[in-house]
Image (cartoon, one colour):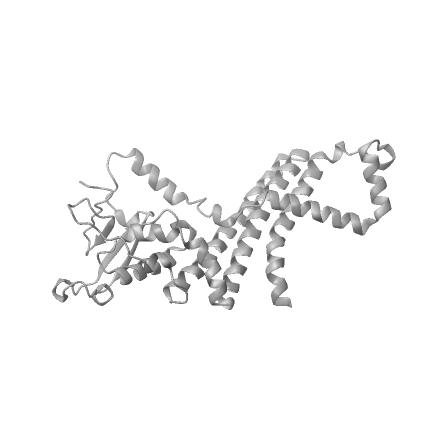
Length: 305
């Protein structure tokens, strides 16, 4: 019975907790406009009479219900803002946009996913053995649009998995982007296939939503207190936004569970089991894939020169 109750509790705790904070913020901002019981007239007098009639317990239940409604209305899903606060990527994008040519050190590009692999890990049945080099090399691909929703290590595992499925000629960038459209549906399949593993995902996702909503509503509460008391209270806002950052981290951990379920074979991705896009080699500009051998670096998609 407890196992059946826990998912429901996780579902309501984020909007309820943030709703209480929103109500507290409204009270701090407008409490001086609320008349006292002996001075109340009209609607406010009716509210005081109702509270006396139904009792304190019923009023607390009503306040909790209103808090839940407000929290549900203003709820933020952690997965929708998980790409915020990526300062390194913003700085790199601005640097490349306003510079006349790209930086030479492409290994420091935060938008590039790269990993090392050996000849054995790159071997594909579609390639003759004499085309496989015996030295270790670095392989990379541009991070897909949804790539910030998971950790870099999980994205590397997925990229290696896709390359093993499709061979060396698979267009990793296109394949990874197509997989992103399926990411949200994997949780439903995981619930059917492995309930214990889904519990791990659900706990991390619920914790992410709780931290993000509490952090955002707490920043509004701090602003309301600062407006009533002292602007110095605004120094506490970074503490509130730290909750948001921790929520983003938890959201990535939840999505990492889905990625590892696919890589380990626990889940089957319809995108990856269908025909994967292949690189069409027509000229030096026809590939999104980036390969590093030794110290040489080539980015044919972004730097055709």
